[in-house]
Length: 210
Image (cartoon, rainbow, N blue to C red; front, side, top):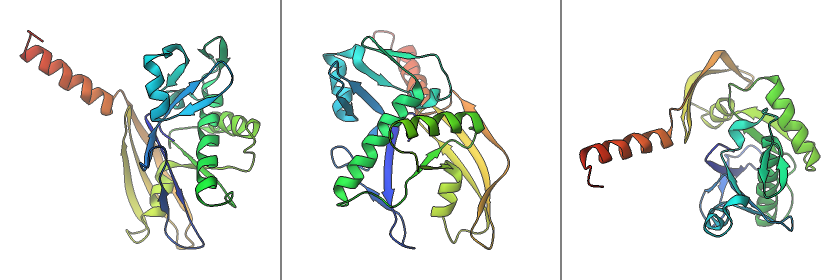
């Protein structure tokens, strides 16, 4: 789960991770929720389409606010970013279970390497409240290192996402245990949306008539 998109994968035994299609058959879905006044939760592209008819009930970019207790008001109901993130994870878990003909034996949810104990605890509590009490949390670079088996014991992982940029060094021990080395670095306001804004600004400056 990231600020802009969400993806899922399954592992069987010691085999490689296999990406599971979400939404309209894509490997990812937008991290967007639509919450109806009847309590219905719509996710991804379908939620984005509701912006045209019911914009006050569509919410995005909430995963980056986990740990911020200032509520986000959708309709007339207040939610924390962690609660909204738990709704998104629950939807993904249900989608995967339906495709795989049963629930997973274990569930791992990734998070940015820069998250501290507080944010992890807040997300874990929200997941437990949503019925996902046995979820294991793993920082994104460690998950990437686990998937990059064979690249060597020490790798650098960079994550240029939709809203931020992260860089982390991860070392894997001979026993297969991964650990983050040093302090992960994070640059806010350096992501896909910022590149979009820069290109848009350049075009407007070059063609004022637009």
